[in-house]
Image (cartoon, rainbow, N blue to C red; front, side, top):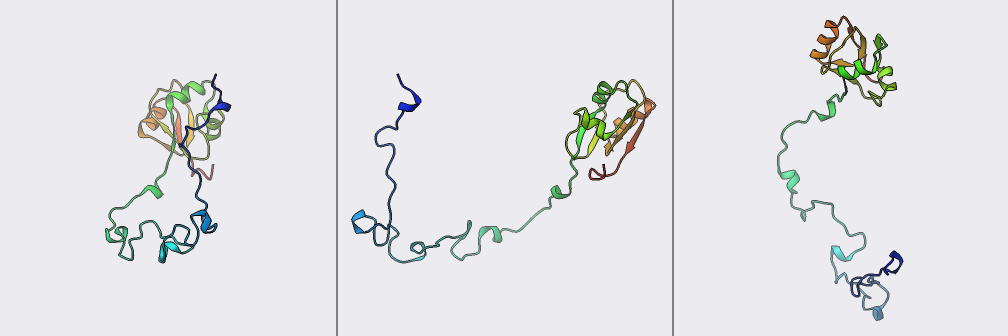
Length: 154
């Protein structure tokens, strides 16, 4: 029977490590398989990724184009009105802390309320942002959408 402890690699599958610089008798003495002279034979040899032998690298030859707004984008975690009405049946005010306590929002990221779902009663909902449809639905139900400051302030 084969067990994990009895497994071994197939014969010839693993080679011994080359032991460099251990004298002529080792077969890898003197220049230690690095050849004669030159940059690659010296200690500390190494060129940066993209080095092209002194020629201007491709990354510097190709012009830059475009602009990315990713560094300035605001990422919200979203909560639907359906989830709010399901979780907060007995309450009139819904704060960001209450959303976090009930697991609808997690962490420090700002919260945005989205429109899918209906509200059966009036809620005063505090969030960092509201979609237009969510704000309309809250107002139609007799509630009030309240925009609070940034995530750091809450």
